[in-house]
Amino acid sequence: MPRWFLLAAVAAALAAPTDADPLTVVSWGGSYERASKRAVMAPFTAKTGIEIQVENYNGGLAQIRAQVETDNVYWDVVDMDFADMVRGCDEGLLEPISVDALPPAADGALAAADYMPQTVTDCGQSQLFYSTVFAYKRDNFGAQVPTTIADFFDLGKFPGRRGMRRKAFSNLEFALMADGVPPDHVYAALDTEAGIERAFRKLDSIKEEIVWWAAGAQPPQMLADGEVAMSTAYNGRIFNAQVLEDQPFVVVWDGQLLDTGGFGIVAGTANLEAARQLVAYAAESKTMARVSQYISYGPTRHSARPLVAERHLETGTPMAPHMPTSAPNLVRALHADWEWWADRGDEMNERFAAWLAR
Image (cartoon, rainbow, N blue to C red):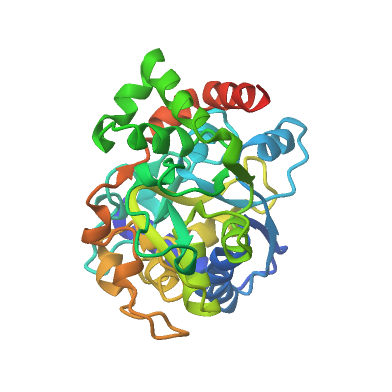
């Protein structure tokens, strides 16, 4: 199909008036959802007339799988971790989305060439980079403060409870890095039984002091309330607590787990064409970049990076120090291996659940 035809079709679909039913979009709640509503959903509705209803979830494929397998699909578009997007695509839970049909870069480059490596699947394209980091409240510490992922696991040097997400993902990686495994060797270690056991042994060393969290809103609240001395958290949640709530939180970027996520369309949705319009709109470079006006997450398209806001729209806070993709914050970053988690996620989650029950 000629390139001009694809681009004209996308433009026509976005511009055409519509009497489509409201789209149900599932997101993560909190500060990221607010950013998505302002940067993506509200402008999309203004442009197309398609209303959006938002529901929340905490990730995973269970609810999507149940809807598809029972032919009772009531979610249309889901904001997903990239590994879940890959697995959902492999299982037939998501509609195919061709990158060739997405809007080009401002210079006319096709979308496929504009996306950064490891951000495109057959069922969706990643929209942004975000990180799981750990953070602490500044006034909980004196002159000696945590600066490395190893410090998170050091109860002798830094006593107090730790907040961690109740999932295998990120915890296994953090445990190995804290135990001395270089970031670029982590997944090679996890490919071995010895490496997996090593990660769980390291988690054992702080297990009695862990407060488990499930939703992204919990770590900032636990830190503010003094329930934990440190907690893993999504960097954008900590950022918004810092700049909008004036919380004295400090992010430790050492060992940050850099990940991506984006929109997937649930297979069998009755609102397929409207869902495709939303995905195409969200994939525009200017739309991606607009998200960074509200939260410290970065776009996955090369052409969007120069458009990223220098300052937070509401507070004027410089964004660069808070972005996971800023050069100083990437020094000891680990890029999440979505292929590894797509292949072994179920196994690791089962092992993690068994470890929790011990």
